[in-house]
Image 1 (cartoon, helix red, strand yellow):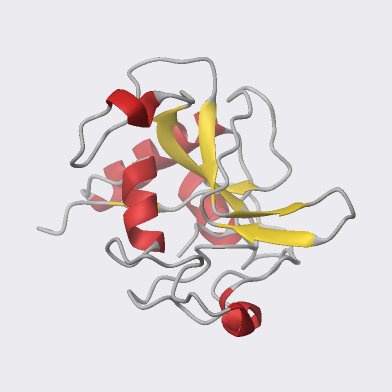
Image 2 (tube, one colour):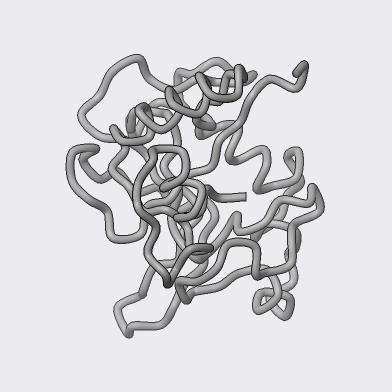
Amino acid sequence: YLVTERQWCKGLGLELRESGQEFPALVLWEEIEAFMGRINEATGLKFRMLTEAEWEYAARCGGRDEKWPGSADPASLPELISADFGDVGRCRPNMFGIYDMLGNTGEWVSDWFDRNYYRYSPEENPRGPDTGDSKVIRGTIFKDSTGKDIPSDNFRRNPSPVKKSVRAGFRLAHPADF
């Protein structure tokens, strides 16, 4: 799942608003480091952000050739995605059981943005460029020139990491040997 406002506030000791507690936490990329540090210390686990390659693997259920997470059938889109912002986990999960891989909000991943990175990256488990000027957001809905919602799990945006993105949430991973 995406990290919710409730989890974000609890992890950082912040006051929780009454509304939107189960919405995705929308944060600056740099704020995620502080959050992970606090919850890693509290739990003894080693949470980290997903890489772009891990996000893609999860969205495509291990590399299946799917146009959208969990399906290639456009008729299934209303069950799989949500162009509206709302509670985490409200759409049907993909075949891996992962919710909200497309829609609700874009998601920060750990990679620096490089338009040409995948031309020279390692083929197996690429970790992203070592440096850059901006970060990658995955799994979002964008508008075409007519204002129609266009879902795209491979839409890569590269906003500067120091600017607030209106729709940028995140999810975390940790080693399975806990």
